[in-house]
Image 1 (cartoon, one colour):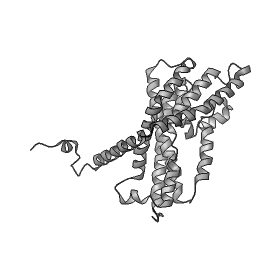
Image 2: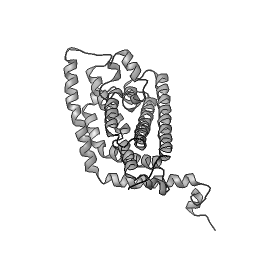
Image 3: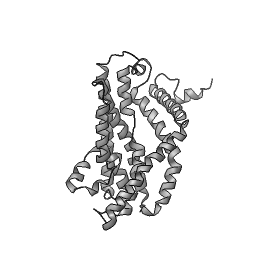
Image 4: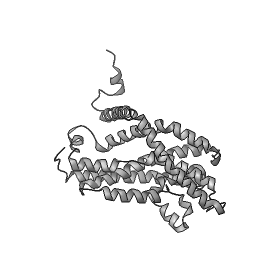
Length: 287
């Protein structure tokens, strides 16, 4: 009797639970993707509204460069290119509602669904966020294509193909880092009833220290040096600086990617340990 396709894949083999788990979370990804794609207009409108502040930002930088040709190695055209690339970085790394959602599930008792069902909180949220990002990128791609086409002359694209590979790797890891960072903050919900004010403070500071507001190189050298040690720069500044040729030579880029990978592992570990520690004091009331 010939083996069925599931047997060939090891899905019917009890000794392959990891494969069953992989299929389970892939199905969660597919369902979440279908759900998110239902709101295509919402994604497109949200992208358009997020781009509107860029207009005032460009006018501000135009005024700053009115009497200057270059500031700390950046021309006006390079600053514009940087700000557009940072929007791409944040498209991957931003995780709106992740930390507050975890804290709310803990507070309201909805965390029980991850405990009584064969679901892991971190894996479920990761699959859901991957679906969210895929839907967001696909639906906002037309608008971003138009914007980048209008400002194409502002960019100085590198010739080395390996830089594009490094840029893509930096963006993927920025997604993982943003997810793990927000998940770590969400685990504070096990110890504090309300963390919304704390999250607002952290996100406000993160907006600046990650390089979203302006290139870190424009700050005083010692300030920029301190901020470039922090993991937040990999959520916005580093990917943009990499593709613009502002991240140093190839060895510096490889080192930066390695450090980014380490930060991903650190925050995933922090989130996991915070979750396990929180479960020891969790009581599933309500929900």
